[in-house]
Amino acid sequence: MPVDGAELWTLNHRLLTVVLDACTAELTALGLDPKEFFVLAEAPASPYPAELAAKLVIPKASMTVYVRNLVAKGFMRREIDDADLRRHRLVLTAEGENARTRALTALAAEFDRRLAKVTSRDRTELERILRELLA
Image (cartoon, rainbow, N blue to C red; front, top):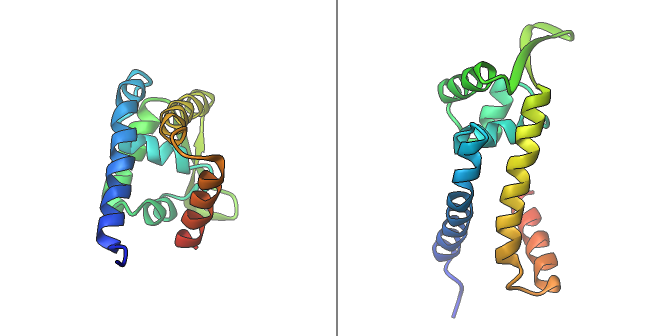
């Protein structure tokens, strides 16, 4: 019997939601809304707001709100890009780096707790599959 793609998508979404929900208290204690966490987590790899919005599939208007909140909280700052003075680049502050590290550690611990139910070989295969699906 073939595997139903919609069911796999639903299972994956449920897993990610359960893991994130389990970390919400820790994110809140760090001063982060879950969506702000994703912005903070991805900003070093995609430092331009429009690029970051596209990567996270977040409307640009929402990205503006999240960035404004993270700047107000002292987690990041906007800098003029020396290569193109019309663009702003997002840079994490020391406090932002700390919050990002702590939030990622909490998320990893919760996900690792669930991954402990599968073999190391299956984890490796899951990583390979996920990377292939994202390529």
